[in-house]
Image (cartoon, rainbow, N blue to C red):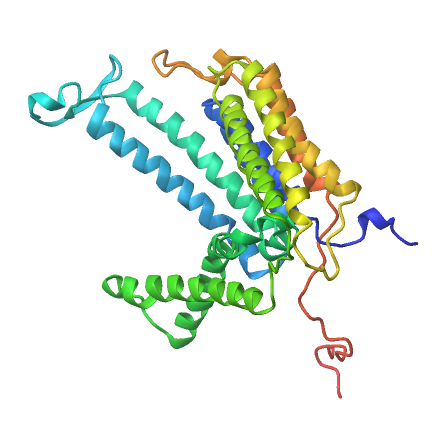
Length: 376
């Protein structure tokens, strides 16, 4: 019995994974509720575990989770040192450092309240969730395939994009290679040699590999342009820059809860339309062919729409008071129904996305194992 074509193992278009991850990040940016943020992290982790490949960078989701925990810790420490007195429930008191008159309103040390620590945890958890969503996109989407799918009008910044998109995945792959090499050599890993023996080689190897990819693209003529009138180049620049500016304003309006939706949504739509027009006009002057372009099929639409639907449910139907509980109340936050619906949409790609084919070579003619006690 043959499986339908939509369920055959194949890599999903990287743009679909990025749209889904950005939708989940948008939903996370609208709330400081720890229950909602924890549910978003769980949903993102489920999708990553269900649909990640066996590429070297696909095992780096743990690194993004650790980075998120570090962000929360830094946020809490800074809150205790700079503005710990945020409520009436005082936990302890730090030594206070007097500041000059010019720094009035800023305090170093002093009383640290439970309300202040909770507020710091809420803010840090939101930032950590954003990092984890972006990390999920890096784990699920192949950065090289994503770059191949970029509009031709962006060829001028393609080399910088190559380095930026591949440094994080290469860091994970380099760290895994160096960790295996250290274990094979039997190194004990003394702490004072950690920077010299691990951190510097990992950073150097990751950056070298990213630069080698950019050089290979440049040597193969990536971004070669054709002769076009000056007016066309000017129109392309105006459309692209204007569209990107409008998109940034619209995204800020959507992420900021105090900005009216009448400003955010129209500016985002107008900016995306201008940018798309600039990409179309600018792409006419790029002489480039694509070998085996990634298809955008029904599964890609479903995954992208799941992320967009999750963000839309939180933005349109979410209760601001329930999504942003006050740390001064010292009460258990509620889990609103729109957040559950949004997370349900976000978890669907773990089922709707096609399975990923393994790239590990399996020997074809391996002899069957001999049973224990049997003679050869």
